Image 1 (cartoon, rainbow, N blue to C red):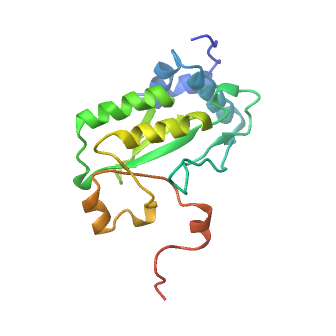
Image 2: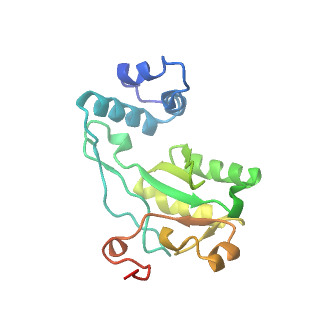
Length: 191
């Protein structure tokens, strides 16, 4: 790592409690990753100022209209390595049983194309690959789509529960609804 770690006394305090802390994982990733070092600096800055500094936008990938969950830093001049922190989500197969071989492949892909930070969503079972620059999103998307058990599809999260879709594909890679979907639902009106 070439970047000096930021002073993070507020984040350090989160490690002092009796429960495991996400900060420990971030520090582990930051040892070899300037991207995560600046992310920790921005997070500490957010705690000090009590303000979030992420804004949305649009990031697209070929073959998918919705793009990814975009995050752009409003304090990029202070933390340039983490100025973009986009997220891709993968929906699990039916029954939420993950194959360890596929999980290892996904983790390897994310270490190559992203920050290495992965979260599992408790209710839905989604895997959230957090922290990719705009330049690396397409590579990550294509690599995830090349895994045999992962189907990169254009079905938005609204439609992921359709029986014909879940039976046809063991995995779905999807993102948040596009701007069009936020103003006009794809679902039939209940009225």
